[in-house]
Image (cartoon, rainbow, N blue to C red; front, side, top):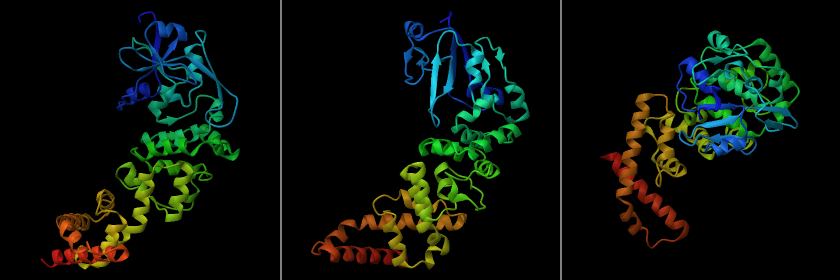
Length: 357
């Protein structure tokens, strides 16, 4: 491998300078072709462009390449990779200056677009006007604003982002790709910056129109908790989830919040109607798998109320489980709707006895 000319590039370099954790290390190889990589034991994994896995480390090594816009959207590019393409040419196709820095194995930086200066000044700035050719970069910038606290978007980059929206370039993207960027923002230290960026660019449409005109702050928590607490109504959750092809566990968590959280927030366990409480347990399928119920209870902001509901629900689910065989025996002679009503009545009696103890 000693004769291979390669450089660490992209996010690994950026995060190294910022002293951020990053387990992904990507390399660009200059002056080599696919045949030479295979001869050295690398395994090819890229389909649209030549990316290889190192035979020992499993890290990704990509041949230096150029891209030429040929079609619509994020994937409409003609890729060219050859031994003649320089490191400068490869870095010139990247989105932001902070992602267009390379480091040699000896630790020497190659920074033709002043990315180190922009890192120092906490600025998100595009490399070239070719930035506008890939509409996904609009959302990548919003995501980086969420991931990198204190970073601002350069004025000239903001201009290009507004142009992308004005010319409806964002319409060309797939919902799945936007969701992947949004998900990363939900996991980031400052997820509210995502929506601030969309607002500043006046670009809620076409993908985030359900949030237009709403004022809110994303609460602390996991990505799925943050998503569940977004200020959306039931029909908005369904529309938004369909557009971005959002995984069911996220949309279901948001729907559970709309349909059930108000009930658990309204009363203490001792004041709750037993029948209504039971209906919520059934709707959340908690009698078979309590995951959705306890996830929902964790969204209760009041710490003492949250603890009360978790304690009560745990006890109630345990006692219903303990009486499962007795309830089945009591209702064994019933059929159809009568059996369902009989099971409900027996479970309510168990819960009432539990409450009166």
